[in-house]
Amino acid sequence: MVIDDHVHVHEWSFREGDPEYEVDFVVGLMDKWGIDKSIIMDSLAYIGLDQKTSNDHTRKAVDAYPERLIGFANIKPPQGMAACRDEVQRTIADWGFRGIKLHPQVDRYPANHRELVYPIIELAMRHDIPVWFHTGHAPNATPTLVGSLAGDFPDAKIIMGHMGSGMFYDAICAARRHPNIHVDISLQGGHSFGTACREIGADRLLFGTDSPYANPGTMKRMVEESPLSPAEKAMILGDNMARLLRLNVPAEVRT
Amino acid sequence: MSWTDVSVCYRHPEWPDKSDGPQLLSAMDECGIGQAWVYGYHAVATHDFERANADLKVLTGKHSERLVPIGLVNPFHAFPAVDRLLEQGFKGIKILTGWGNWLTMDNVRRNVVPIAKRLQERSLHLSLALEGNVPVTGGNTFLPYLVREAVPDACIVLDHCWSPASWEDYLALAREDQNLWFTLHSLPQSLLTRVVRELGTERILLGSWLPETDPDLVYHQVKRAAGIGDRIDAVLTDNARRVLQGLPPQRRH
Image (spheres, rainbow over the protein chains, first blue to last red):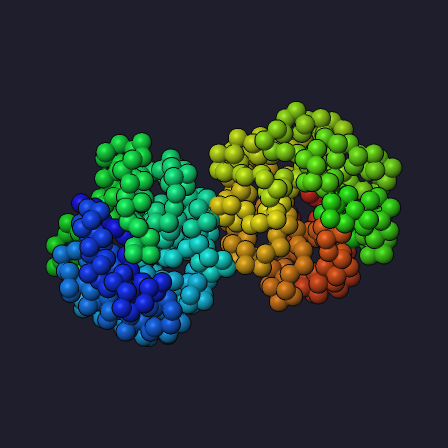
């Protein structure tokens, strides 16, 4: 099963009225490139929309394609911890979303902030779900800070989004240090991907595309045409994420 | 009182009239710098590291009480240059991460780690100038992390840490690696104060990169950040002395 770990509805680089803005377009890309499931989140949260409305959008998309899309909740700690707790309850416990997305750069807090991030990690651990961190922007969303956080919560499931973007070596070093980090490879290229395969291992890399901002075919081909074994490619393309999300575990047991 | 400036550019290609020997010594006198660690910075323009180091050796030989020679090498062709420099009495090696030195993880292990090992064997320090003309490709912390991983007892100085946006990462690294030394340079005062408080005065050096920055300006910024008055002179000088001996920072009491 191929799972794309990072896809957006209402991608902010498009506008209402653009076909790319809508969930049908996103699912069309999945069909075109042979992607079975995608983790989806609404992008408008990154240009000012509140977490609740943004997650309503994500739910609408998931409801339209429940077999293809898996919701992750945009959580914005600066909106207050009580609101965040309520939103986690609503999206994760009530709706069945499978993870949390944090964007420390747009919401302006260091990724290892004790008051704003630690409680979110504790909530995620209580629900046994991963937390997906945007990384690649200093000073707040860097792989070094996410690594520091992972060290403080060795049992938390941390996803290093975009493999640190331009800070890819820092991301790789953080993942080597902290085995609870999985690394999303979206927006990366052949050199950094190859280095990550060798340094971290295929069992902690996650296929992700940042579609429709980026073309999913580029990323998928990079994995498929790499010198990895078929088993390793399968891990990256979907098995690792399925394990992380416990997709093979019945929902009633999972919760 | 006087203090030690651990980063001074000899023959800076952009300010040649401010960075020859007499001008540097004059600036040191004006700013109360007792001793300066100097490197032949014209190598970044000429890529002739051998000539730059040789010129520097002549200068520092004439002023050995005040100027300490630090070798610059092209990390991709570091040997036997490093051995030769250490035989000549250079007191450490500085690696520049800009200027075309693309240090991938493999390149760090292949090219920088052997230098760190050689320096460690001789109780000398390795200075990593983290930010060249552009931020280091690949991130803020992997370079010192990989060197430390390979040479746990290496005396490592992080130099040229100018970018305020990178300091969250440097501080996170500092918490993990208590033996790292940090060169301070001009930063926004509030950030500099936070940096000094988090690192402790035991781990700080002052590196002005004269003539790129007025050392007097940086000195007063650091003095204000440290909040220990004139005792900062002794702290900066004693810390620099420890680094010259390849020692780690003293533990905070």
